Image (tube, rainbow, N blue to C red; front, top):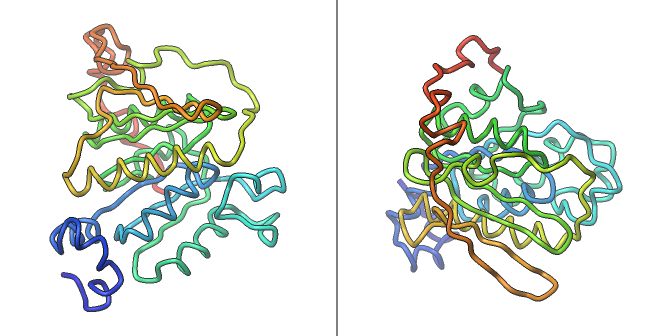
Length: 256
């Protein structure tokens, strides 16, 4: 139930979707993989919207080279673990929600437990091996995955609903080469907010998600394009190749 403080704080958005919608946000549990360029705006705007439980995972420390885009981290935080820096800011932004953080590299030994009972997974990482793992976890658990990625002035986003839409491997069967990604901070700001918007819409059950649609942002031309995507029957993850029938390989993993 909403408190008087909740009604006062979220009054402008309650005008849009009512107290029932705000209660949905308050009871939601969102897992965010990454506290960097994408994770920062995602976490900030989900916290300000009143998402009741945010679980944030990252293993890096704040470096000077992060400060052009990772808005949760400030000059004073250089050398600090990103999850500590992020948790500090998020608790100041909204002390009435549950912020849970883990300093960990997401891999097959811990991914299932880290995601735990989340209602939604948000991909805010910078590499495809981890994205593919999150995609797998989303399918195994049957929870949506909101994907985002950036490079330079360009970005992309889509929402994956296991069993109903193309999965990440359907869209990207092979990972692009690993690189140190050039990026201006505006781009993860834009894509991160699109991801946060997708998360809020999913929780509320309102609007049209980026399901089977890959949104492409071109910052230099200030244009948004869209590509229709569909499930691939030969997809290694969700298709009919047989690999998608593997029993949960994470059942013996260590709980964080």
